[in-house]
Amino acid sequence: MIQPADLLRETERGLWCEPGGFFIDPMQPADRAVVTHGHADHARAGHDAVAATPETLAIMAARYGEDFCRTRRSFGYGEAVRIGDVQVSLHPAGHVLGSAQARLEWKGLVITVSGDFKRRHDPTCAAFEVVPSHIFVSEATFGLPVFRHPDSAGEIEKLLASVRRFPHRTHLVGAYALGKAQRIICLLREAGYDAPIYIHGALKALCALYEDHGVTLGDLRDATLKDGAGDKRDFAGEIVIGPPSSFHTSWARRFADPVTAFASGWMQVRARARQRGVELPLILSDHADWDELTRTAKESALEELWITHGRDDALARWAQLEGLKARPLSLAGYEEEDD
Image (cartoon, rainbow, N blue to C red; front, side, top):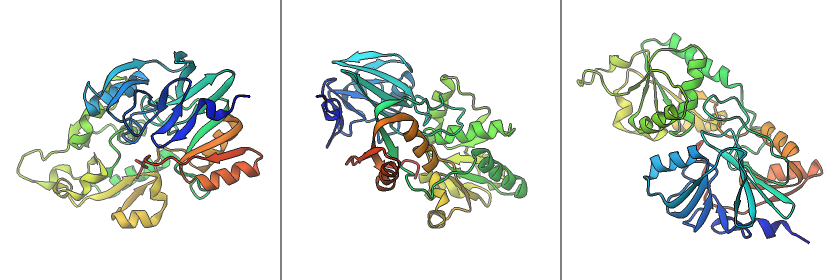
């Protein structure tokens, strides 16, 4: 009788598919890797062969250089390919551009690995697709019932309302460079904000990559002092987006009495906002909240739910109460880039 571990099992290097001869999002260099998305905790350089969506491969090349692996294999959403003895297909995860769930089928057994995912509206990437499977391997970054994210449009309106209220101040928005920054820009455009948006230099390459893949971001400009003389009034009333790490550098001190904002699902935890000195917390996450996690488990896990990085205990207990077999996996090394 076929056991799930015959198809997929956890190892110190990540999830290993024996009949396919590949890892999924391995944390160390591997001979063959299927990569779910381009965030650095899932997509690492140094593999011999990488299979992923075209967008994820482009992101890896932009971040690590064209020689990030020896060979690469690109396949689009829903396209089934054979790797070893396993039929593999990738399906939208709704996390960032090119993000995918990896569906594995072997001898009638189907296991789908979610990678990171969300089910909220995001104009920068394909929407999450339900993939019913015998076993669904889910992330659980926000796997506690307290995490129920508010409407994204409402959070963007909080930002715009602050801009209207404080036209003499720069609004400095901290956002992760891949995915979050581009999503905020697009949500601002959807809300009718057509003014230039200023970005930190660390965001330029990835914003250009998004544009190259058909994501329209509008008028983006460098967040550098316009006259070269240090006049902070240049950015009064403007929105400036940068990576959170830049807030602690001299770059952030060049703006006019900045309103410090930070976009993250963790901004629901007031203590985290206070610790970061955030004046305007924006609860915008690229991960599923509790309701999205449980809804997806109901729709995707036909027999069993495996849970990777995050708050696995609460989600496992919920599954058991729902009559669904659940198993937390011991996988280390996946950071919460939403922090």
